[in-house]
Length: 321
Image (cartoon, rainbow, N blue to C red; front, top):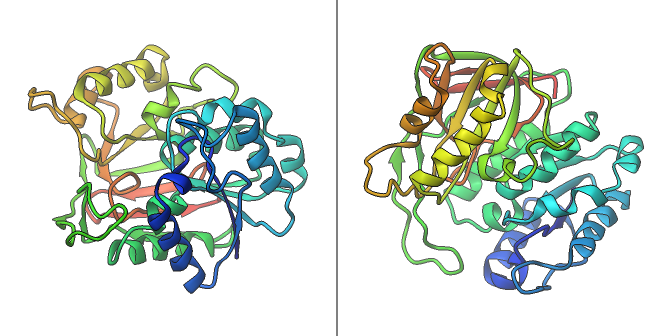
């Protein structure tokens, strides 16, 4: 396995050298060969490089025939800036697997819409995920490998983790074990959803909605949405963005991920309560508190896959990805 990594927004390899090195050490111990993007260790103020430099970093990995998997180091805010400059034409002839979450959603959805034959995984980012400490890093790795090793005609079943955490500590240095919360998934109308899964980070979608990089949705689609470290006002705004674009009128259902470090602004409202108010359609089924996002550990979730999720058994099956 050869993973090439890039930083399309936040210059995390420069900002967090200890966590970056911890991630490299973990993956190499698992037998992974790593190919560094050309912006590794570099910083241009709030970003890793100019728009064109960041696009070039990704394109170099696309053109590197030794690289099988292209993985984000972390998210950020500005990955949408590079989308017009990615070599999708080359990818159509030489498809690869793309992995990441959060702001990497922009590139993941762009690749999925422009080059459907690429395998696109809403999953771990190199520094953010594999620089984590045990037991979470090992669990995230096992979920990732289970999806990555599956053949295209195989059905993969994942069981939800028994516990999770969104504590914001132990980033560079270990302070203490994170608190572990007992896990549970919930639903509104029905506990089982089946269809084609597409989506990603809600805040990132605001930077590509209405463009050719945003997926065309249909009545067979289940929309995955997740976010982190947002307040209630921002969450309502972003949910309403999808509502006003007609997204909720097109889809079969929603999977809402756990929202790490949500700020209710004193309202005592939860993300699901805000979503239900915005959607304003009790017939649209929602399964929520799915573990695909900024909480740990993380389930790797193939975009474009056929999905069967059961909130009662806390299992999810993927096929055709």
